[in-house]
Length: 230
Image (cartoon, rainbow, N blue to C red; front, top):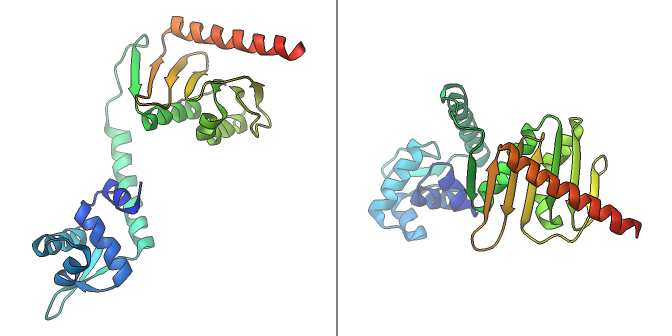
């Protein structure tokens, strides 16, 4: 994600995002000047600057020809954070709770979506976390695993290389890159692939599914211990 994509994620259009970056770089500009510098058609540049100003990304300087100046980036970030904190507060307080069966099998597609689910499961865990994945993939959730350890949870890791995991139980085994199995509190399970052309995982609270993956991890640990002794 580059700065234009990030600004668009924050609610600006592509033209508004390009214009904000240009204002930061060049200083005060008229719509005509902004159009010449960005390649945005003049009418769209004027509309973009007006929209950027309405959304809190620029100030209009009145004069013979209207000029625009960028809101300081640090100020913009604070304003956006304040706005989104308010939005998240409303969502958290007002949105209805999900009415779903605990036996459902949910397919999650996309690396980012899978990682978000993994992180949330670990952060929500209250007793224990078991995870089996490659060292490369493990790095994506190390902060959450460290947080779980610091909260006093039992954290068991099966991975391909020894990570910095003081206070966690770690087993070393050959792990296929991208493959992940995660169990939290013996109640939630996520299993699937994090990379490839179609990253997909399965999430469930189904007790049979949890027991199946738990037995798989137990057997993997048992085999690692046997090979270590030999």
